[in-house]
Amino acid sequence: MTWDPEGAATAMYGRLDPALARALAARLRPMVPAPEAFPLERHPDVPTAVVYAAEDEIFEPAWIRFMARELLGVEPIELPGGHFPMFEAPGRLTDALDDLADALRAHADDQA
Image (cartoon, rainbow, N blue to C red):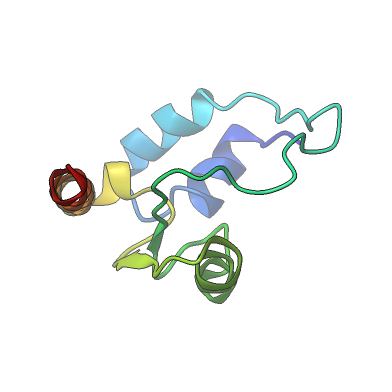
């Protein structure tokens, strides 16, 4: 899959400053599908979280919530905004990741 940079700047990065959108679109590379089926039979037994954007332009939020709850057994964490919170609202994403790290540390302390 490939994107025309101008089309990607509009479709994928439309919430961002146009100059940043163009710069990000210029860095896109063709997507290559995996050569084989997914090798794992089930999700690894590791701490798991799903952080998603409520107005995601790429993935349907209802599908992300379903995947988190039904397939991974976790309650998803919703952030406002679009598909690229690391550019659109990096502070909110950082806060969510910090909260997750704090919860993981607290859980590890409780297990010790």
